[in-house]
Image (cartoon, rainbow, N blue to C red):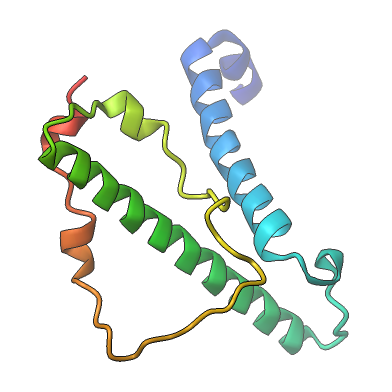
Amino acid sequence: MFLLDYISNVRMRSEITAITNIVEKYHDFFLDWVFFGKDGTITENDPIEQEKRFKYLDLVASAVILQNTVDMSLAIQTLMAQGETVNYRAVKALSPYVTRHLKRYGDYVVNLHNIPQPMEAAINLPLEIFET
């Protein structure tokens, strides 16, 4: 029944394809960019160590996605503060999986005295951008 409904329902096919594309983009991001050491091969034979490695990699991926989302939201807020019009289609086309601006092998300095602003302020976008 599902296959018959799938074949005959254009909207359903479109929605499933869109969701599948989002999942595939995440897997490409995770496997190609985050999981790059040893060509993505897990060399440990211990299931506990394998699970730890995937959890650590997922944590790194989530941190990159969160930072990208905050950066994009701040950029949108800046554009709007400058009087630029930002519409829903432009925001909808953004992806948190971008990596061009990241230095995979760079020097990373952690400043524990630099307290970031609350996340709610960073990602709080006005509803007007969601108007088409």
